[in-house]
Length: 212
Image (cartoon, rainbow, N blue to C red; front, side, top):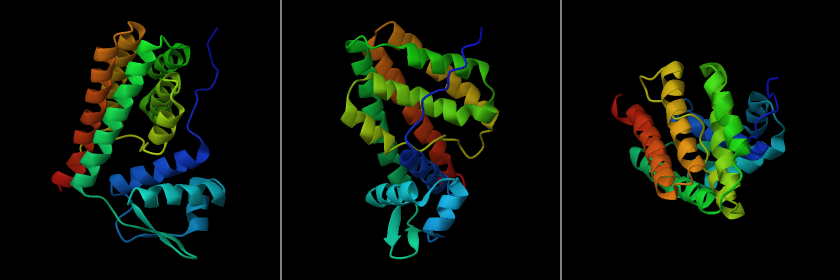
């Protein structure tokens, strides 16, 4: 019988922040764009409250400037911002892998994500990718680390010339390798593999800033 239990995803406000961050980093939403609160909530299909909270997260990260009574204004990204963002993620996510190995954490939810990733197509890869990372953070047992990484999540990091199928295939192979190292409880190699995975994503995303 198929195991059809749902995968765990980020809380709504972090998902909203991730969707907006991904659009800003990929330049789908350009610098100077005004994001009205209610219109943004409607576009995301959620209520106003998590969007308002997402705006605060992104303003703290320097991606938005909060505009009284009209939502927020996009400040945009630079190659330097991109590098700093992914360097922080790489450090924190590699630490999460180390903690998972060293505490001998339960890997069943992570394995569940990997099984879904192997059998899925590119069309629903974004949610499965998110769930894979999120479950590693949760398995680390460090609640502050989970909060920090949740607020840094930016969705798929597709390069300028990468198709969804190519991205999913490459990312899926890296996820399977990371899980195998977690399963072997090899803290050093698992942390290194996660760091390489995140920095590869950084380099993919940088093509949007260097190849135009």
